[in-house]
Length: 207
Image (cartoon, rainbow, N blue to C red; front, side, top):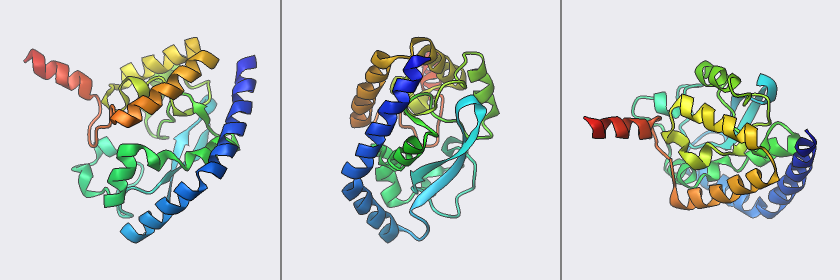
């Protein structure tokens, strides 16, 4: 698609500007993380990119270094015990995602697209295949992110990713971008230790 080439150019320009403008923020967060807990500043994790290729996503570390690896937060028993004090703030504000600007600059991710699945989230990867959502650039944020985030069941998340694929274009990306800003300000859909909360809430209401 012609738009994917334009999208890549936009990603390069905005990620370059982001790295320059946000460098003071990066410095403050790096210092805070180092003071708060021992361990590296950045957290690297194998994720699934476009066409199911693998890459290492970058995040500011929000959890203790002895946290079980390659396990989604919602699958950990009592996830709060693993999250650091600074980490709670970073996750609530989504500032832990900032290092992904580097992934975007390198071409491993885009600003807007389906959130990259863990390499072992086979159910999500398989579900996305039904909608062609594995064949577009993964993103820092996306349509599913502003429509539920951690609250979404796997099938719903994949379907929303499919909607993004169908409507992919400049206007859709702009909509996701500004929708993300509002979602972050309201901390929408952030559920530590849980996924599919929307469905669970509906079922509890029925009972």
